[in-house]
Image (cartoon, rainbow, N blue to C red):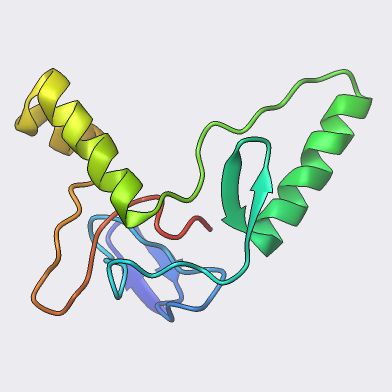
Length: 118
């Protein structure tokens, strides 16, 4: 286990359900797709997360509370499109603060909060 900025412990193994992918911890390779993606609402996420969220949504619903998904796994191509749309709308400087710019690093790594969703 490694400690990263912000004192968050992460398991750096790409296949781990605990992997964190963001601007500091790139996806390797950039187009990596988790093998166990499932839909919850209109979002894709890893099977373990999907099962837990589905149980949470079910319990909330039985209690009269509505819960919806608003964010999940994004493919490399989708994230590139999202980022580019933000650049077009707001400019690169602001887009960099609200979205991950996915670029292939020399080692094939990519950066994005939603690749893979954990």
